[in-house]
Length: 328
Ligand code: MRU
Image (cartoon, rainbow, N blue to C red; front, side):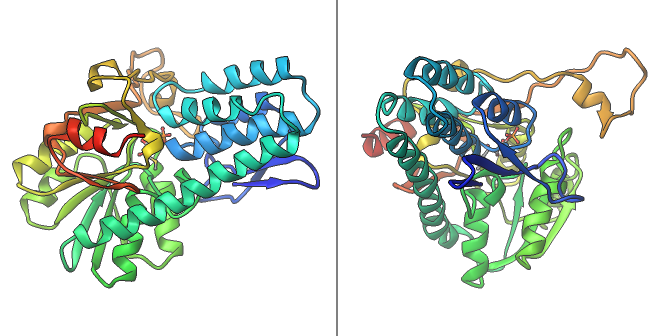
C-alpha cells in the first residue's frame, strides 16, 4: 500500500483480481477507500487499518474541514465490523483532526511503518517456535497483502524460511473468497517459499497422516481472555490441531487486541452477502435462489491456542494475565 504525495492518492493493489491481474487502484476520497475495504479490494486486519488511516489522510490533504474528516472517520470505521484494527487506526487518526494535513498524513505513515515493524518482530519471535523442517498449515491470508508488509502468520513463515527451518507451507484455499489459493499462494510463490494449496476440507486427513507439524494463523480481533476471531474455518482447524496434538499458533500485532471485550462472545462477526458463497467470480454454482450462509469469521476459544505471537512478546495461557502484562 502506498500514498502518492504528488497526486494525493491512496494506491492499493486490487486483491479481488489477484493472482490473474496486478492492478493498482488510485483512491482520492474516504468513500472510495471505504468501498475498497467493504468489497475486499484491500483486506486483512492490519491492512484495512492502514488503508483507513490513509483514507482520512487523503481527505485532510485535499482540504477537508474537521467536520468532513469526522464524517470520513465514522464512515471508514464502520466499513467492516470484525477486525478491530480498523477502529483502532481510525481512533488514532481522529486525534489529529484539526491539525495541519501534513501531520495527519505523517500519522498514517507512522501507522503503516509501525505495522511493518510489528510484523518483522512477530516473525523474529515466532520463527524459532516452529520445529526444524516445519510443515506449516495456514488459513486465509495473513501475509504481506494483509498487513503493511511481511505479514503476521506469514511473517513467522518467512522468518522460519530465512532461518532454514521451514520445509513446506500448506495453504487452505479459504472459501468463498479464496484468500489462500489466490493470495497466500501468490505471495509465497513469488518469494520462492514452497507452498501447496489444500481445499478447506483436507486438513484433518493430512494431520492424521502426519503431514502437518503445526498450524499458524492470523487474527482479526483478540478478546481480553485470549479468544481469537479469525477467518471462518480457523476454529475447525484449532479443534483438529488439538485432536492431533499439534501446536496451534496465532500471530497478531497489538492493534488486533481488544481488551474491552472480556471474551470472544462479544466480538462482532461479519455476515457477508450469501451471493458471495453461491457465485464464484460471478458464476452461479448452486441452484438459483437457494439459501446460503456467510459468516466471514469464527472465534477460537483461548484454550485451543498454544501461543499468541505479538510484537510485544510470545503469550501463553493463562492469556488474561499475559495480555494484561503487555497492555499499555
Ligand atoms: O476477510 P479477510 O480476508 O479480511 O479476513 C482476513 C483474515 O481473517 C486474516 O487472517 C486476518 O485479518 C489476519 S491478517 C494479518
